[in-house]
Length: 133
Image 1: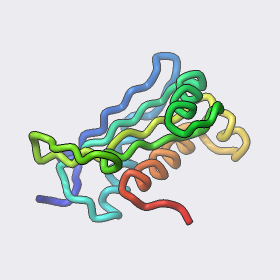
Image 2: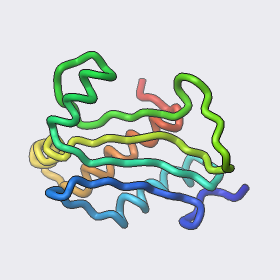
Image 3: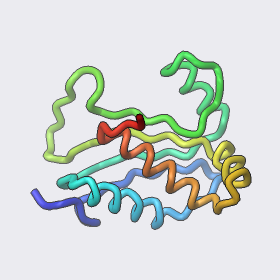
């Protein structure tokens, strides 16, 4: 297998219609993080930008907390092993709350797309098993 390169990385990006993001920048962030961490391809990751209602629902269901948050990540490596019919390394899912990103971007005085990409990087590191201390 080769190192993750554009032709070996599949980024499944779901963005609710009322939200906007630079899809190319998200993909480049994913490719950079995979390369920096020596991840071999082919690789697939799913990223969703959702509203606060959906994020609160997921937070309640998976974290037991009735609150919204900026990001949740769901690594495929947790829980029961999943046997895939292909050689694609499916890392899992990253869910980001767009309304929280808007608030944080204003608070941190940064562009919304830059904050989204910081969270994509953070979530991807979690999917790779790298957690903050």
